[in-house]
Image (tube, rainbow, N blue to C red; front, side, top):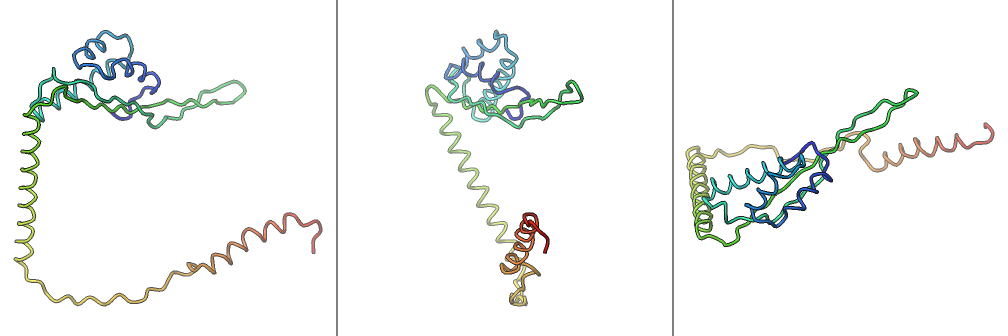
Length: 184
């Protein structure tokens, strides 16, 4: 889950309680916890379980939380008006949560499903390559009459000498003028 509008420090309070827990007990903890982050993490956990169940045909009861990391995201910069026309900055922090579920006892179904998906991907890859070759062979290659790449001149002012020349003019000349005691 990326760019969650909540400070990472507040989310870590909840995350540290359920790290390494069984999915069933973690769900129970999150449902009855009184923090705002608990409902968001529960939603993420349910999404991860649904993905595992739908994509790999795995059982929900066989999972535990292997890794749960909360990292800081980009901060929104806002301003608060203060006395005498001043303003103080406010950082509205965001966070990114990454969840990794793992099986307690590895199932043979998951290994078979993974192997099957790999085989299907290889077959699709081979089909794509064969189709590409057929389309290329359908058109007879003609002799290319490209001009040979010749020497391309650098644009004006791209040489190292010109950089040195302009650099010395811009910096050191100005510094000398600033620190002169008398005009010449």
